Image 1 (cartoon, helix red, strand yellow):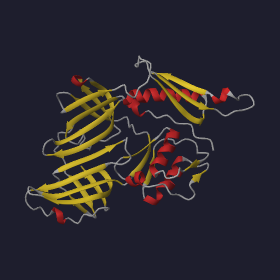
Image 2 (image 1 turned 180 degrees about the vertical axis):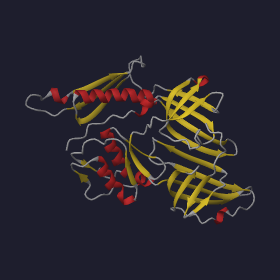
Image 3 (image 1 turned 180 degrees about the horizontal axis):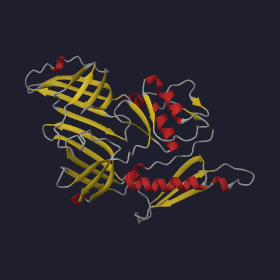
Image 4 (image 1 turned 60 degrees about the horizontal axis):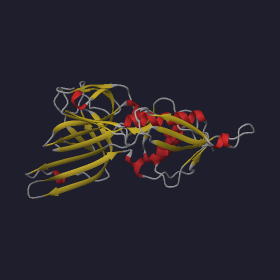
Length: 348
């Protein structure tokens, strides 16, 4: 963990940098397409903050230690005044927020024999967003069609599921598609050293003893009737000792091997996501003086909360206020919680 002094968070708008914020909350995660920020400047005396030329909808960057945490737009600008203080609130999100909010309206709305990155690039082009791909995206889609009313992000996420990939934003305004688990570590989070608070929640509410995934396979002269209409795959969670079955209807065209893989994925991912860990540490920077990043791992040793091992940072929140000071809250899960399984592509 860093012993360097905390860096100032700057809001850059139209070539101007605004700092001195009294309350800060910046949230980013691999489980959300767009990062968010909320900044407040408040004082008992007149600060002139309400006269800052900041407008809702303006392009902006939120920068910490020279690195952009958010590259996007201001959603709202709120001057306020009261008997005790006056100031401003500024809220905004990553540029990728437009992909979450806006409908996918493309002509034509379907593609044949095109790769994921080609379709995604066409979907995001009107928004001026850059696409970055890591790793293989698999074979071209024989056919991919937009669903009526779905958002751009929903369409991209659907393609990613077929290829076992994740779409997320790293805070630089670029849409990334690949595996969000970098495998790199931010260092150690240790009880009695750099951990302020920690808690671990284990739940079985979304776990099942038996996973059965049913689907249909393509018929032929040799295979027809029940042989193709009732294919299924099964998996089990040995940690769930009472009978709790879950039936999942798989894709239209599947074989027994792919359905079994899907059932095993459900068991593994639900097991991973049943372990939720929250750890709060002082400061916002790692030992190299860089802002903590989601998609990295932390080596955890908090015996009082029964937390140990290498965990994946699913989400993190930078905060600063008068009560809590400058801290980072990590939401961590076992790495298998973000195991990705390519879903079979629907037949054209």
